[in-house]
Length: 295
Length: 313
Image (cartoon, rainbow over all chains, first blue to last red; front, side):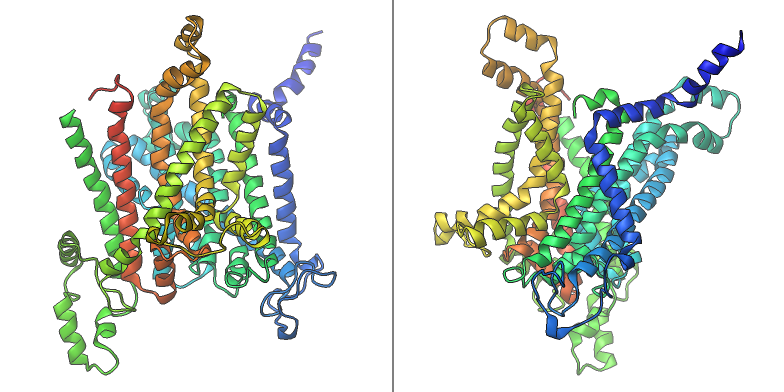
């Protein structure tokens, strides 16, 4: 007799309220599902780039330069006769790598600094002034200035964009921590003699993860756009790496005769960024139902 | 009030200090020896050493920072490595197109985005609302330069309504000036417009749910009067805040837009400087744009008391 209600309660318990909220929100937001599907497709394209009817994206063929899209060259060829379809598909790898790497790095750095500044008074004043200063330098200019100092490489691009993105994470984490530290459970932990480090990691950190996840999605989208802008103006990914920004940069003087050099990488970039943004909006709505009705 | 004004002004000093330190460090860390570049190819090591001492390149970091700040206070932004001309002079030559483009974009965008946001909130759930929300998501996802090329291909190359690229100063006549600014402004303003429309809508939705809005309707005010006189007035503080913060989107976008449309402004100067590794120019542009951003947001903060009489400092 007693076993029946216990069994009935099991499936309900295995589904946490947060997870159910997620599923409900996704049902209500078909756009978020669209975003997720497009993003998964892009990841698959990035992983399977060599097997999707592509050729070496760097292979030159001066005789076949600037061919418009055709059955042989799906996206046409560029001014050095390279196959644009292959270059665009391989470019997916660059954009996704940079987007994800910047999102992870900026979130990790911002989280570490934000946790400490939210709790340590004297550090707060200094660190937040530095963050205010960094945030008042427009992101693209900050990244340009850093890239000008070093040579072009994938790592440097990731570093430069991370520097321009992480202050916003510090801001967010700090404001969350300032709210959390007044909560009774934090007070209880302190009263029980928990060390500051342990309080931060065990009690504060888990409560900042949900908003951070949303923020990380937006950073990923913004980083992919910034990379394209940097490459487009010649301060980004090295020209020998086929990134979407680089393909478009090479088309800067050719767009009147070869618009497809802009259209194909531009469409891939816009679609990927749109997918990430839609996914972010969906998660934000799932995590904050009150905000969902407004935004 | 005056006390608040002064305190707010003082608060910008540490922010600009951080910006100045960052920008100076860029020059300090930049590869290459400016003395060797200025001395030229035929200089002896002794010549270079003399120029180094004259320029103060041998001094320690903070002493050089001090000299640099002092020079800055006198309007000296350094010397361009590539052209040998003063950076302040080079920037002054390029200011006009950039100011024309950003101011034009700012005005048109705000005049379009705020009414759109208000309309979307008023008719929440309706087709205007859906269109505004779809636009705001798309606006955030379409990179400035991709959208710019789409505009050129459609309106300049295919339809031939507007010039493909270039800039005409206002002295050449108002009409040519405007014709050359339409496409760049639309391209530059889209993200900014998406941001403002979105925030306007969200804030207006909050305000429209308030009791005093119901009261205003109940006492028989016209819907327009309620929307503008009661709702928008109370929603103005967050909207103006976002207009200020969003200026950073315009500044970042200007570099790209000027490149696509071949507009000879500060953004174009920056891109040319990147290709030539002309650090003093990159540094000066970063400093000027950041200062512009800080000043605009200072003005936004000070405008709160005008917009909302309840805010008293």
